[in-house]
Image 1 (cartoon, rainbow, N blue to C red):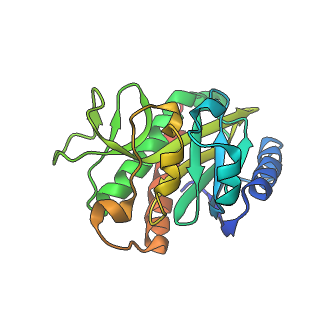
Image 2: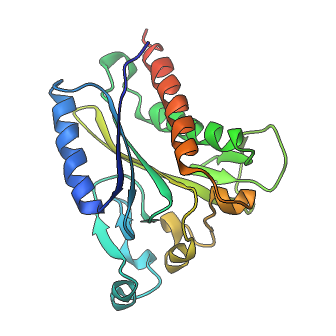
Image 3: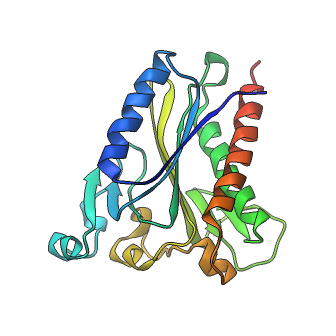
Length: 231
């Protein structure tokens, strides 16, 4: 059984969390700690990844300041997204051994963790060809990967970074959060795409703790299977 350390920070300021995960990433790279999964929520913040641009913010900084929403440029992949209370943030501080150094496969595997978690609650989660993250389809189907986008709404964004083959940054998964701030941006730099949440899809408040437990179950299983693909 693969050992995975799980740390739950609760609600935490984004910049403080960023400094701490960088520190943990360094410790993992030096093999001073084991593979670690951080779960947290953040106070309102827009984060812009390496391929992002402030041009994808539809409102001005004064407006965001009035709404008490920070803007932070970070080294993760992807464009712009929003974090706020009621959104599950997962930071996998995982070291990829030489035998399994396939970043794309790792990202796809994490997407499937979110898909399986959503589907356990009865939400029709899918991945979409050419798009990163997890989306909710209106179509009832066993199919979990679509060839193209046709109006699906985004429930989870992924933006990871790697240093010395150790991952950090990670996943945002909309559970019970206020979706209004997503209307202030072109979500992930994609024009015309909308965000949704598990509570909105299912029409009820969702137990955050239950989502965390199911997410941990699937990501632990995923990581064990990922490591066992060594040749």
